[in-house]
Image 1 (cartoon, rainbow over the protein chains, first blue to last red):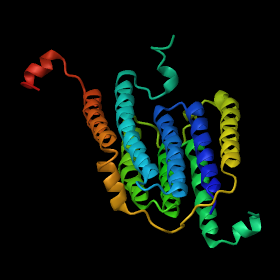
Image 2 (cartoon, rainbow over the protein chains, first blue to last red; image 1 turned 90 degrees about the vertical axis):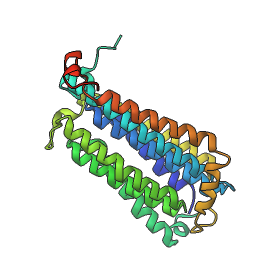
Image 3 (cartoon, rainbow over the protein chains, first blue to last red; image 1 turned 90 degrees about the horizontal axis):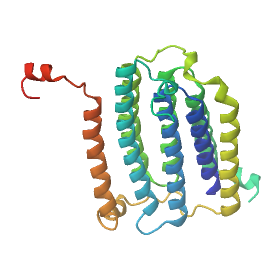
Image 4 (cartoon, chains in turn brown, yellow; image 1 turned 180 degrees about the vertical axis):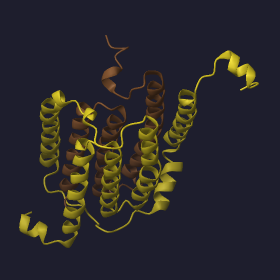
Length: 101
Length: 184
């Protein structure tokens, strides 16, 4: 197994996340795209760890940190979407232009 | 390494199966017109990612991914879609069709840049010790030893996110309602 095969899958997942981030209108779908990008980062970290095999498994530790922060991000993001939906009856990011310059 | 030699290793067949499943379901996540289906395809993507982690001998991270993402985050997503009354059937308003060409070009550029960089940087670096598991004890000692400060900070972030999520999502009562309910 080469390390590149995993890195290419991660790059493709990241690119898919970028695509979804731009193309999606629904705020929940935007969050799903962000999750794809974070997963790609995790694959990279774990793949590098498998190459280096550091004595303290540093890559895996950081993958766990990324997973934790992603979970917190989803919780806060969905709470914000919920509140915006309650106030404006819409989950469409194009409608949230109040803070746009 | 030639393609013939690469494909002759059985572990790479597993990689091809899991990797293509991850990519196909990842494409469906960003293209499907159904919110619930997108969340379920994300489950397939993350399950495949956990499989890749197992191949990279990161057992603990793989099961953490399964527990935290497939167990909790996806439930949160489905909850969010149902509470925002997103239509469960096909919904053509989910995408911005005008943004599609720009997004396709940009994501293709991102993919080409990233894969070119990694391919040139790592060449044919092999993964040593395939199938040798990482000792979870090592992970635990790293988390509570060298990385104890980030570990505590992440714990604090989770607590702050929990409190913040509850504060943001709860319905605000006006002062009159609060009096009626007693002290809230």
